[in-house]
Amino acid sequence: MLDPKVFKAYDVRGIYPDELDETGAEAIGRAYVERFEPRRIAVGRDMRLSSLGMQEAVMRGAAAAGADVLDLGLVGTEMVYFAVGSLELEGGIMVTASHNPKEYTGMKLVRRGALPVGGDSGLLDLRDLIDAGSWSGTGPDHRGEMQDLDIWPAYVERVLSFVDVGAIEPLRVVIDAANGMAGTMLPPVVERLPVETVRCYFEPDGSFPNHEPNPLLPENREFIVRKTLEEGADLGVAFDGDADRCFFVDDTGEFVPGDFVTALFAESVLEKEPGAKIIYDVRASRAVPDTIDRAGGVPLVNRVGHAFIKARMRKDDAAFAGEVSGHYYFRDFSQADSGVVPFLLMLMLISKRGRRLSEILEPLRSSYFITGELNTPVPDVALKLQELKERYADGRVSHLDGISVDFDDWHFNVRPSNTEALLRLNLEATSEELMERKRDEVLEVIRS
Image (cartoon, rainbow, N blue to C red; front, side, top):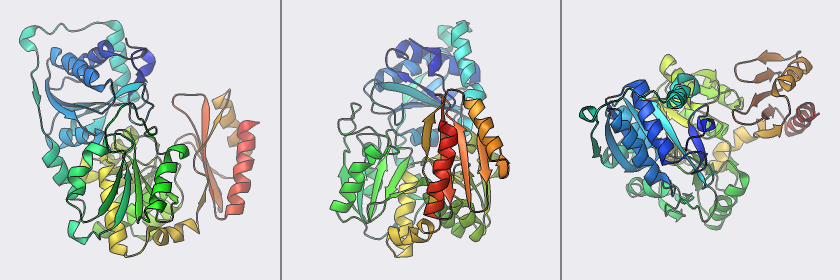
């Protein structure tokens, strides 16, 4: 089964087996090799109940089309990126549905250098190839070979190279792995650190018996907030399903927005590499460009989405990029996103500054007042964006991604969803009162 709608803007994702099953996975593996002609690729899988069968099918399809396949086994998404980048492979496929509910399956596909394959960089070509069914007819003589590869030792060394382990203090850290891949990935890293960890839901289990592996939803954060406070921890960390994103809760139990995390990491990166270029997305708080400017870096605003961010990092040789959604990208990690590297960087940052995370964040929280992302279903997306453009024509308007409007003391971005008829609002102002007033005003335009 392969429903054409599983091909999304950034990856493949659908309900198993109704929209995507092993037959569809095998076809995708084959089409990927026919389209991009890689000689060697890496393939890994997450802990979802369908992932082993789906991985085997993808590898069968890729080998049938003539590629040699390195089977990474049960790994986090960033480990596929790392394998492709560090071994100079021509591509990679990760079988995962990331943070989606348990009934989903999917894939993230990359080319040489871990550059993602998205809707406008070849993913829709795979859909069309499969639809046409016009395989080149690779014979048995040209079948690729499959072999297992243990990427773990090299991966652990690489992520640890981002910090000075000896400078990390014996912090108390609560970690919620959400029965996802972080439960497998973190133990060999954490055992090298002087920190005390309270490990929660570390058993990989694709039925997600405790909560969905999506920490962006407030209901999935309730546990990590409560546990961080109960344990009197210095830090709470929650990972998504495939562990390529991590989210932080400070010592007071308050969630740390992704744009504030980006600002803190930007400072750390610029201490090591003065004048570096740092990328942030259009939704972000002004805390990000302000912090980068103050620290002597070059702030570059960009469209949302990992395919766009990674391409821009290469084009401009940026050292670091951060998205509001909790994706953090590093030039020295194949320009790819990682969940484990930010976890390590946050431990390092708190240790070096010698203060509680809540104290470190206080200057940002008292100066930048953000709404977070507010989603509204709308019947006509284009019409509503035009209405917003006309209503706020007295501001500085940008169409880089959706519509962004800047005023001196407040600004907002409204973008359409890639998959649904809804608009996503992110707004910020210089005071809480102004933020709330403008939030309600813009939402009234969107919802009228």
